[in-house]
Length: 298
Image (tube, rainbow, N blue to C red; front, side, top):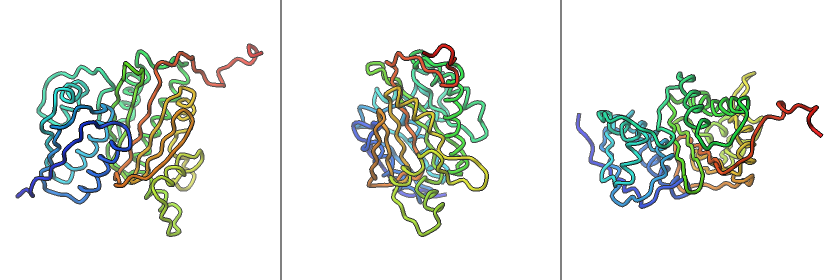
């Protein structure tokens, strides 16, 4: 088999969970969606900062390229990025022959098959909700939040019709923030919502995400309950003064400290990225309303 000429992308100086970072991911995604049998080079020579949680999105992109028989190589990785990639397992994913033991200092990069429900739940319990500084909450609420995040995992299969999801997180000690990202390369929210309306609808990405995050809205048919399953997560993050971002196709939707905003990217990410930001300086104790003993409430 002959390889096509190399395609090279220069990774910018800083890659963060913001519009510029998601534009980069969307640009690579849309420019390579029909690329086969090629050699893809991701050049990190200019990069000095990389949000670790975005390894989930990059992992999804890389796997999608490999699925189409492309060879992907990361080159000129600086000391900063190389160190975090080795510690969170992303380096091993990019270099399957890498044997050094992973000693996670953040929420480890993982790829999950859609049949690995128990493994995924255990991972969320141990590495995200089990983080030493994660806000204190009752065991029942912790289980409910785990189940809510599991809905996002299940949606990648039900709505996105993909085979894998990719996860990773980062703890920012200085700011006491924990960012956690789930990514997939399945059918986008924009396509699912427009197909659901079946009326020649051509809503843009931002509008389709706005519709999808509303409680009760779902593109599932029949008696199957659905939706993005974000109600509990959104309620907790609002009280926690955290944030949540959803990127799918050209849409970018964000809710931060209870305020929502949305916009459209210049490019399209041919999948979905959900990033949750938790405020670990939060000292409140969280319990469900149903757990409050009414006899002790004045």
